Length: 355
Image (cartoon, rainbow, N blue to C red):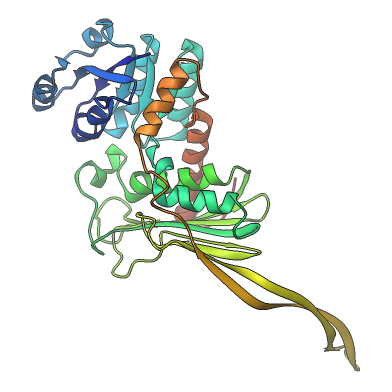
């Protein structure tokens, strides 16, 4: 079934990426209308053949569409999502979904009360680098993972947050801009309870918002994940590194090129003795060591793993038609936002937060 989209907010993301994606023949959506308080944005909507509105009530009452994408500045996400849900529309919201986890909970409860679909545009679950790392870990290439790192270092090495990203009252900062994507990937990959969160969230070159964050998450099994995002990176580190009990993987950058695994090909346990000590004597104690005798390396595929962010739209369309389960679930979005809040608390108070 082809679904018709009405946009609340028709700025850069909505008028560019979102509208362009909806116009693809393989995507079950058609853009038809947009509401925006900015005359330039409304003019842009008209140029693209959409009906433009400067009044939200009239927009929602038009019933010329059945699905709403909210792409306003962040501080308006919650009220706009709730208005659209209450008006009887299914809704997808741009990230970051909210200013607080309480707002996320309100959006979820409103969707449940109204019996509508609600999801968030976490399209980077379809990033090639993430899919390569996820597939390799799930295939058991490195054995049981015990440490995973995911990071974004800016391509040019140095910079500050710009546009709305520099305004704290707009929900700015690197953590909710890029960090929310990286955290969503990690939490989607590691679907087990979070035990603790420890973080540094701070400004380096920006005046009002964070442009450097490092978050360390410990999971119930003992697995540790680290997410790092920064605009200042004179030397960039690999996008993904993961260690397991049988090897490790590296994905250097977003492209997925040169991703590889190095794992144990041959190893054995040795048994012997080592000296130990009491207060009065030297004793011999049995000792068991693992000796790695040979490694093997192999590249991870990248060209055969397609990166198609429109897969999110395809899934949402199928979920609306009752053909597929929604991939980006509201409960997952809430979990991610609560980790973000725990990271901010950890950094501000200098403590490890029990989750």
